[in-house]
Length: 585
Ligand code: ATP
Ligand code: MG
Image (cartoon, rainbow, N blue to C red; front, side, top):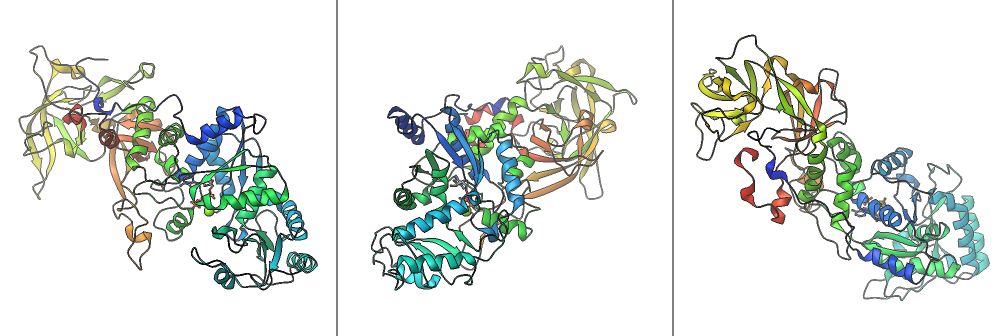
């Protein structure tokens, strides 16, 4: 590489992700269980999404834990769809979830559905009824809630709590046969109406729901509740470590109760903190609202935190996995800076993305003393981080485009880029000096005239040792490819988008500037063959990825992330002064 043409992204050197897995308390539990031979040295996990939406970055954390920890100990991981709520579940979601898990780089051992177990769950419910541990209740949902009591008041027994086993068996069979309308009856576990844990106050096991299921069709008109289905599904799959998020901590006694009453394989539930990201909404239900109300173009809108969205935005699976590894797990819910996620994608793309020159907001530059019909092929380095990426040729000619931002007619003090009588380096090109400008009727500069110094070919310093303070990028006007570029800001203006004033929902916090479409960007000609999903660093501007909406000859690029690494600054690992003016934008 040419020493007088230093890499512009010098500042983006970020701390690398730890290569050894950081310690986490779940790993410690597994290590302990292996030591005591609790599960005969076996590690079996599962990832249990409900197919009621697309996976988001929060699920990625769970996936990395479920699959990552099993892999680490030579264990197995099942993908199990928790499809116990037919009214909200669809095959489209099942398919997208499988594609997303694969894209993240994981492979499941068994593929299961909670609905595979409906017959077994039914048989076990009958077993519990026979043991006097479950009963059919005719109270309405409202009444059940009232009878349940509160944290300070014990619950009250339902008047149906002491039905005979025979009556319960009869009613439960008739519930199954479809004799009763939705909501008429439920099956409840008979645990303890005075338990300090509300989940133990005779939780509902089955509700009547005359709805077609995406897999079992109309076979069932009642469906098991999450609490009854989940632990038993884990047990059937002989799951050893069943990781879930902290809101299920209070459900663990119930999880264990069912397993104990049924005398089945003792899976163990372990809770960890849910991922929350600043400026980001992580709830399938609320993301669905954004899609349905058309606040975004779809589940895969590049502003969405869904895996399909951030993939389209240009994120790599490696970046997401590194991020998930670095955030670790804990027993308290907190919030992670979005800047940290961005840091990890920048770090990954810095290693692998080819550099190209692209001008997003073009300003025409004419080099008056450059021969009219001359074109020179300049050598440009593809990736300073990867010598094997080689070099390419970039055409240089008399008329170029530079960024509007790289010229000021009246430059402020710390501004070192192009200005009248000022000389700068065109990256891989020449030193050029501004001699005059052309303005439109509104007084805006529409064309900049320069002269170049032939002794600075390639951007090298001239024999007289003259220095310039800035290096800017450019594209030859005659060779440029037109492109559309989509620039993004956060989808929400609030750090916590869930924070709303009364009477408003999260959509009140949407950022009206989250998408900016720029239609007349100019790209260097090497991008003619860019295909959908390809990722590049546009020098000095950020990382960009080719969008599927691209058409032949009219590519669309999404900005994945800008170059500036705010996370590194937050972490104070990179001192502010290490970022040269020319790299800051
Ligand atoms: P959502 O509210 O977005 O629908 P969920 O928890 O209902 O989330 P599930 O499909 O039930 O979604 O989740 C599958 C797995 O992913 C569960 O183990 C769940 O705990 C985990 N998970 C979901 N969201 C997060 C998150 N934000 N951080 C970590 N794990 C998560
Ligand atoms: Mg859910």
